[in-house]
Image (cartoon, rainbow, N blue to C red; front, top):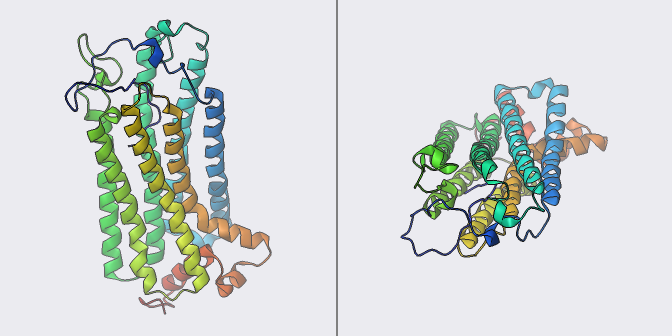
Length: 349
């Protein structure tokens, strides 16, 4: 389950499974400021560094498409829109995390017993409320990157035949369904919704990201969506005539996409470890893995344009690069353009 911040002190419990702990002031030893492995300022810098890294290929992608009018197909424009939405949602997420960490740093010298989740008690409900809202931006960013991949595939394989079109349509429906699933999990796992940040008197502080049942559902849905998206082009590419260099390049794109799967699994393991430890000392580690998943997805979508940019700066030109067949973007985009002009049949000839 993707989660930008772990606020609740998760410990071994004798309560029945899926039973939330009563809302009470945590022990000072469980305060988030008790033993950070890395300073909050360092994690703020790391977050913005990763987000800036993702902005570089996005800028190159948009620049290349602006210069080449032939690539302005509806599906390509839609992919660009989803890429931008993914980055902007990630930017909102990091801005929220920066605000939270900056707020907590103001109270580093305060007695731990006077703080609640790293801030004075009168600020804790507001902090937890904003943290809950940030979850929606995480999944918007992740699923926007997945949608950009689907739009990218459509621009390549839409003319491959009815079977490819059905596969793309089914993948789109499945991706939409898993996105809605995550929105519903975040919004309605706890009742009332305000229990996520301010439970009623005598109630329990609740969170979907602290229930392993919800976390397991989310992780399985996330990984399954990535596998469905990555599986779309395999059968199609098998029937397309590509050289060994193009195939190797496409494999590299798939590997980059697979990093998001690894990040999701690592985050799941981290959350599992938090359940078994006295204090949630890996809070920021989960933050970073969530951002790694977002950034790797954006990089994978923009990688073909990055290859085109490198080849142009070497003075090779698009025509020469397409003929040489050495670039991921050149091979993919040239195939899509040839099919659009009717120069290639469904078998890629």
